[in-house]
Image (cartoon, rainbow, N blue to C red; front, side, top):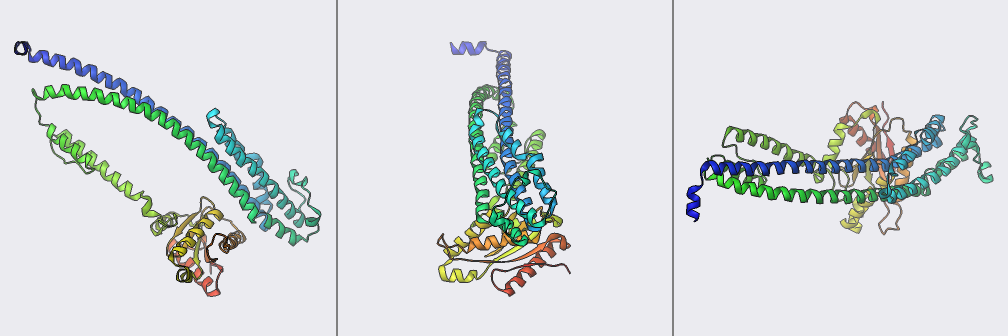
Length: 448
């Protein structure tokens, strides 16, 4: 019976049935590609929305850091310009309030909104302390033209009786002491908890869309398998000249290597295009390799990362600080290298807590670190000194079981040198001068 059926079948009939089958299957694949495209678009839209939510959370922290910087500058030098910039941010820019509004999207974002509102609450409570510090400076300087809200602030009798210079000192202490930075850390913790909630929402949304995408891909795979089975029938009736290079290419792709440029001209063109993309992909992976640019022990930039950052900094708006741990060799000799490593990790933790998120920290030697303070044009030296003093104060604490340490620092304002080579050279000279003075010292390079 099979033999009779075989004898009755014609090649034309086989081709017609194969064409009908391929058209139906191809139409099914095309239709499902539209469904997958919509899934990709929904996934991209969800990622964009959650990126906006993350940006909103960072906006609140950026606004809080900006207010901190302005009030610290005002308490240090009493320039009313910083007071004006503070209140412009607080009551005109309203970045913190806008961040809250962006987060209040729907019920899914309420947990993230709650954490962000807590960060906002801490920020507002911190403003009360900043208002009081600004009022002290105003009283000390004898200013008469200042925002109405500060006129409502009353000094306690003890602070009212202070001399002008003592009021300035008291105001500076209020915005640079441990309690102030602890409140800042609480704002950061609330913000990170808000970002964690956003990440959970994003992962949940992505998982749902990816599950749908996997179902659609499984369906496409089934259709493709059926197509392959149909094509195998045609293989017996047509040329197989193009199959061999395709199989070779598949093996090479699975082995994660370039594909051979062989076969028909069209396939050679595809092989060349793939190999070019493959080379770019490998080059991108190497250039973006995290381990290639970060220190394994501390997590900050290593020497390679430092060189990359140095090549792209804006000298006009950057301070470079070279830090060296005083007598670090004695710590290794006395307590062992494991303790020495923990000391370096502690130093990086303290640096991350004192400097801004935009600032870049690099480990360029055993116990030598560089900090690039970016976007710092006009920053007073007193503020930098205050940061150094705070760092040394944190490093002297022994409640974590580690020996007390201190750092010596060389500082150069990028606008005082002509190029990046001079920047490091002068910073190194300033560090050398600090070392000659003794431990726990700092030196600012002065342009001759």
